[in-house]
Amino acid sequence: MPVPHDLFQDLKVSKEEIQQKRTKDPLLDSLINKYSQADAEVVKAETASSDAPSDDVLKKLKEKRLQVKDKIVQQLQASS
Image 1 (cartoon, one colour):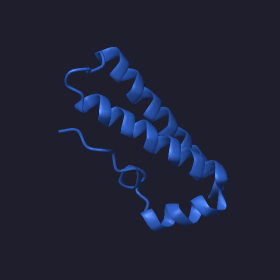
Image 2 (cartoon, rainbow, N blue to C red):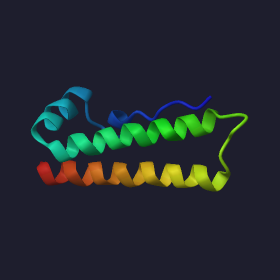
Image 3 (cartoon, rainbow, N blue to C red):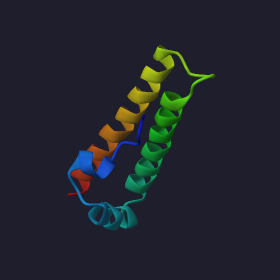
Image 4 (cartoon, rainbow, N blue to C red):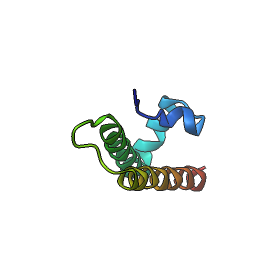
């Protein structure tokens, strides 16, 4: 069963640390919101049965999620 990705674990930072940075960095906050939305789309697509998307569509959703995650990493490095 598909589950949402744990962004904080992937980034090796605590949720509290990210929350502090989000309050000071509107771009980071926006990117994390986009990541959550993209992740939810992937999970929804993976759990769909009757209207399941094609493998190509699912791959594009995962690539979109990864691109947002990469931007989050860049933003975190820039603000450090």
